[in-house]
Image 1 (cartoon, helix red, strand yellow):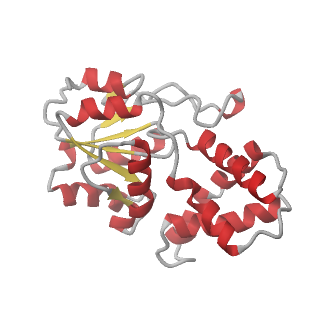
Image 2 (cartoon, helix red, strand yellow):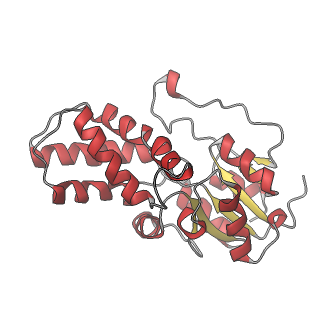
Length: 239
């Protein structure tokens, strides 16, 4: 498909741009050492991430008013600590641990690929993460974003169509000129419904080495581009 009209790329972040699981496991292990707590930190990271969708749904359904992802992560942290029978942690220490999501390591191809893509396109995260979270993560990981877009700007969580449309509106571009990049096929399919072209970049290790947790690698045939990584995406888009 002709991609010559593409002017901007917007990116899913958790799993697509950064390796959230290894990063949270690493910081959870440090948290355990600091507080004398032993736990299965791999399982802890998975459990914390598993609360992501259900807590956002509480906002979508109106059970909660608009609440940014930092606050949702903090609410879900209390639940996960209870599930793992971890007690005696101060509120201040929990608040500090909650910032783990601000400091996630990029995949090896992320930064070099983004710098290649930046030569030709406007780049922005299109994440459910809030602006401060995305800003901290970008500075930590060296990601060359041109602006920060996503849920907090739109006051809608993906896959609400308003989230994708708001990004296009703020860029003052037609959806057909803004490509959504993600490792999650559902994210891309919903962006396509709004009129955005799509780039699928699979991240088979997002949820770790367990084969049962690996996402389906077979791309939907409707995707505009399928790339092995961000460097390959730059090659395909001529950047």
